[in-house]
Length: 254
Ligand SMILES: Cc1cc2nc3c(=O)[nH]c(=O)nc-3n(C[C@H](O)[C@H](O)[C@H](O)COP(=O)(O)OP(=O)(O)OC[C@H]3O[C@@H](n4cnc5c(N)ncnc54)[C@H](O)[C@@H]3O)c2cc1C
Ligand code: FES
Image (cartoon, rainbow, N blue to C red; front, side):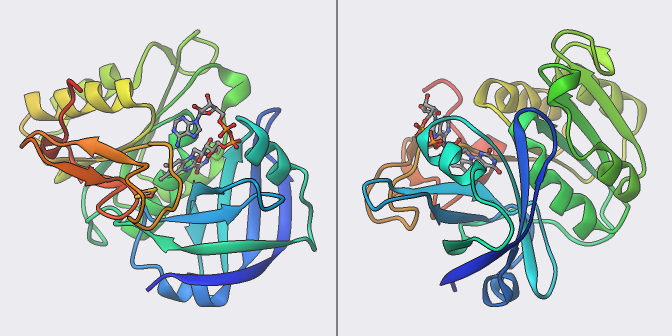
């Protein structure tokens, strides 16, 4: 059940030139999280601005952590907050990844889709491997945390300044070729990346779940702002029915 709470920023850290990590004191919200992949809807600034959806990166009994990059007015306002400031937060929202502790998972994150995969890695308890892709080395984040919480981590970047030069789907194919017993591929990132990862998983017959990013308004299924086309011709709300869907449910051609 979502909770609306005024949360204090316990820690605000800059991870690189572009990304910020906030730890929020949010016991009621943290207690309501059902698993990795859910998100919170944060009021960013004055009332004219809508809330902004940000994935839950990690949580414990008292706090939850978000990691975000500045894209526009809302996230720029958020980035100017510091420890001790208070935020109006609604959450946890949406349906997260369906996974069990101890499963042999391949986690795939691209860019700002990387943070929620850390929650998956921690929830899996060290049994997952991760493929992480960034535009360039200066965008990399959370690498130590993934090393600590995964069996193995493979890195790539668009320009070759970090790990292998290229996109995550090539590394996903390498992993699925090498090890045949992954139970699922879980992915978060830009839509073209998700489409490519979904195709790679399908080629190897491994179930795949994807966390979709759509613009959102209400965040709770009341406005159609985040509707996406599904493969069976129906429309679903990313905020309420997702953001995580089975890859084969999504109409990748829309
Ligand atoms: C379920 C979900 C989880 C998310 N998790 C994170 C996260 O963990 N960290 C993070 O940094 N960002 C995350 N995002 C994206 C984040 O919500 C947007 O970057 C933010 O809303 C932009 O708000 P703004 O006011 O700064 O920019 P705006 O001025 O609203 O937009 C700036 C630019 O970003 C584009 N944009 C805005 N929202 C989205 C969106 N949802 N998808 C694609 N493009 C968008 C706009 O078209 C525009 O070009 C998530 C989005 C969703 C839907
Ligand atoms: S954002 Fe309003 S229905 Fe999803």
